[in-house]
Length: 261
Image 1 (tube, rainbow, N blue to C red):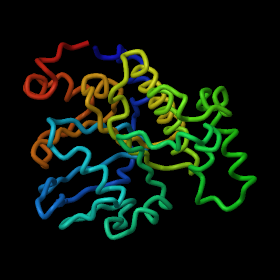
Image 2 (cartoon, helix red, strand yellow; image 1 turned 120 degrees about the vertical axis):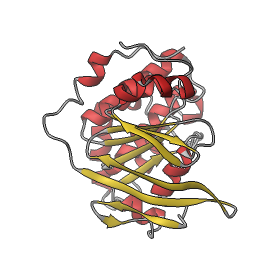
Image 3 (cartoon, helix red, strand yellow; image 1 turned 90 degrees about the vertical axis):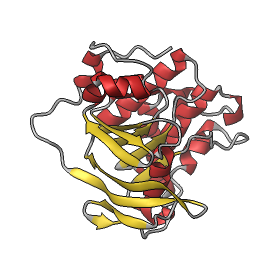
């Protein structure tokens, strides 16, 4: 069951009169695991302050794109640039310092630490402890669950609540780009809707979102841009609405032809 997110909610924050700057670019990227290429010439750009969704069948290379951008996977060929500067040669920590943060598919909170401790840990690159405290207070405004559950051990939270805390933690460094890999995986529809609403709020705060999501229909509804991957290659680029309403893409990847909404 897909979360019900209306187009009015989605488009209200994404319609602009001028095309935003393209800040992240993948150009003819090849790379994979164990000597084989999962990405085979992958090329697309991400616009500043957009929500860009990557969709495609299992094995298309969606999560591989995420790990390549964050530096976890070293690409074999091609380049990845941020503001025109290559980042694919950098280490993950250096990419993190440049403002690209990834929330992985698997839950990554320290279960025996409190929510407050987990979120503050997200600011581990900040040396000034007072700045960490100030940033934590700001995060509480954006993520009410952090204030509400601050003293509770992370392991006592539900899967959806943990996901929201992971979002909060990644915001501690005031990132420019947040990569979300399957954020609603395993969540019930109600919690998935909460996660999608939070993604919209993060984007409205000025953060660029790159979203890999198995719930393609719901993700495309909230995305300003979309990339369709197939076998490590880009098959289609367009707005979220265009991809959602494309009959061929609907049949191949979305479980049937999408109806216009």
